[in-house]
Image 1 (cartoon, one colour):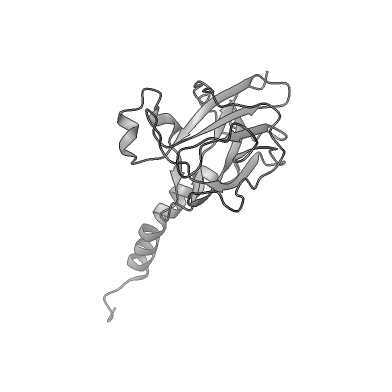
Image 2: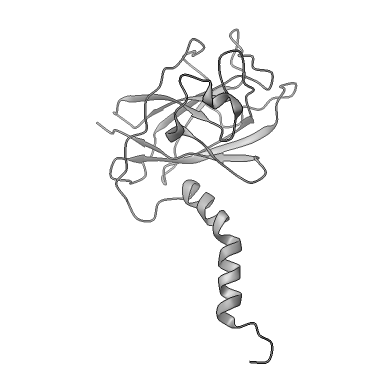
Amino acid sequence: MASGITRRTALGAALALAAPHFAFAQTTSSALVCTPGTLTPRLTEGPYFKPDSPERSVLFEPGISGSRIVLNGLVLDSAGCPVKGALVDLWHADGQGRYDNAGYRLRGHQYTDASGRYRFETVAPAPYVGRTRHFHIKVQAPAGPVLTTQLYFPGEPGNARDGLFRKELLLALSPDAASGGFDFVVATA
């Protein structure tokens, strides 16, 4: 071999470069094989939940402050299989840490597709007094109990000071922070 670079070396380098992308993709890709999982931890819904949010996946509206982000992932049962038709209800503060308590800005719900996928286009919430940056979520499989929880951003200074923070509820952020993934494991009965 005159070049000094073998096929094995080239393949190894390519896999090493791609590894971070595979790690992120595993969190947000459809499950090909059902793998049992631990139920997603419950957390308080907080004081800002409003029932009857509109059914929509795009929560971003003109005039809302904050960096755009896509929140996506799967809803799985405890056996690790996708849950079709699960309710996913999202609400959160805007880019200045304010909730809309008069209307339904940055609030919406949708139902997972046949592969258990959900996807929201919204803005990244800002931290506010006493709380780190977070999303509020309710997830419910058809005929299952409601899971109420929160999702957190990795690397936030406020995580250590927020008494509700749970590392098991960290989003998997893309390198540019334009998307965040989380797979929920819920009870179905």
